[in-house]
Image 1: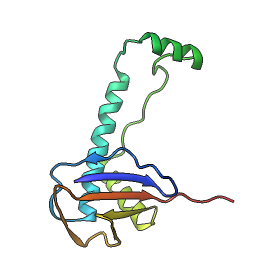
Image 2: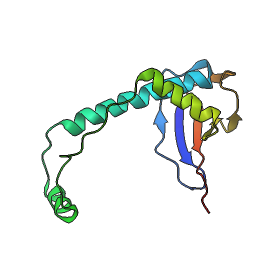
Image 3: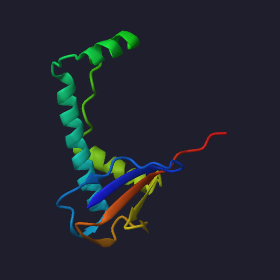
Length: 133
């Protein structure tokens, strides 16, 4: 399954994400759980990499001189939320209509309705952006 993310009002999509193992008859609730698990694992990996010692290239040195700082020192990434909390936040965001979900270009409005997911299915999550004025 391919997952795409977008912000309402922008023409560009985020980088598509291929999720393996998300096939069969699944609900949006189950799909969101799979996505949250994947994102938490990616965040943990990123957090671990950012704490590791890194070699600065000449380009890094130039950027550091321009910004006035080098590397990631002084920037500690917070720990990821607990898995159950992250799952609950994703469900709450859907319930609050902070994003819409489309499976193969058909909007999903029920978290617990079952959908046939194949290897070429495309789930698009569109985040709604509040207007100010």
